[in-house]
Length: 280
Image (cartoon, rainbow, N blue to C red; front, side, top):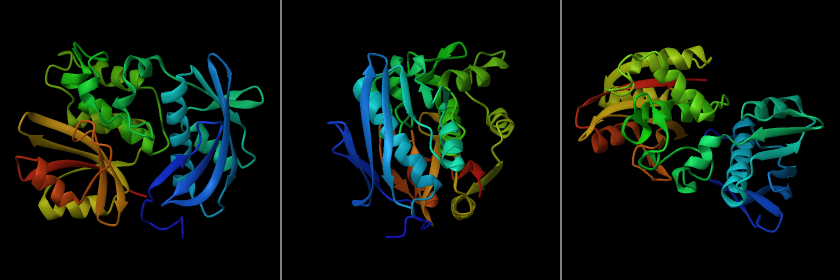
């Protein structure tokens, strides 16, 4: 199996509850890790082996899987891991909010994470169920009713190795809106915010096959479309050359994979949508 192929593999971790876990890609073993709870606030984990065929994306997704599994199970305030020998892996961990702490790298689990039930997130830690975010403020409102814009932006930053806290993302995007997000998130300020965070984002307004063609040229992005209850944002990531994994489009759906055109036909009441795209 070539782990560097363009298609995204189905990855998972297995057998990890006893302190040792397996890293699987399409059910093929490609690594191992160990973990232990060092005190009531902290969990330490470490990769013991990872296939040399695993690329940066695969490495990041395994780290996300391990981190989310430990957060869901143990609910620690801190995650710690050994500092990798490879500079590139240290940089990738930094992009997931791991920072130097003595002889280790540490990630502080943000307080907002504990305001939400674990099922608000998927196995890689992406926020996929806006219906469960009433406890998170967004402007003068709550995120359940107005939060799809910041949620899509947070998910997109995270999948591009620029993770930041949910609170920072929601706070930044609501800060300069005098209406307190009465009308939700406008697409223009979201575009500028993501660019300000260093993402090479471009905006398009297109229909049907043109929208799909633009998405096919990207690695990830955000779609803004109209459904029966109004405007909605959802982040996406390319899963294969012409299919995409959509996050928080259908609340709680963990593996929603469609072509761009099929998504538009299924979920949008209008033939056009705005697409924010990130390309390699």
